[in-house]
Length: 152
Picture 1: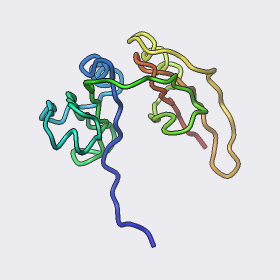
Picture 2: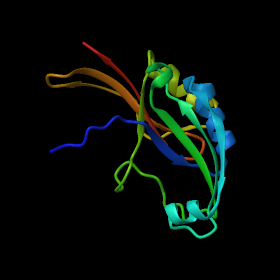
Picture 3: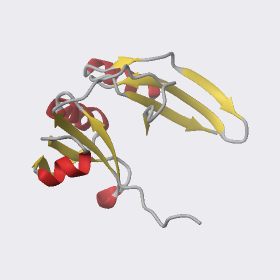
């Protein structure tokens, strides 16, 4: 039995939600979805299990899905927890991916806006799926992004 569900958002906890959301707006064309969040209350502490939790942040509409598509939720917490190194092979959410017209150009734009490159750009034929050109990059806070383009 499965749950009837619709994907809604992915959350990134940021050091500076304004700077990180600006990166995603400028580089990927994400659009802010008002209102910005400024949450602090007993209900938030209960929901998160973090005493005195405060959240500030914004939802960004992801490109390619129209006005009702999923969002990238970028939140800044107070107090902030430990930040283990982000790596592709660690348990948990590893990366988010964007389909782009030109992977090499997209990577250069990511890097010019404060992001980085994680691995090498590769092109590979995936049996019965097609040819993919992709590279892993990172946003200015080290969150991993895959830039990809599929072709026949």
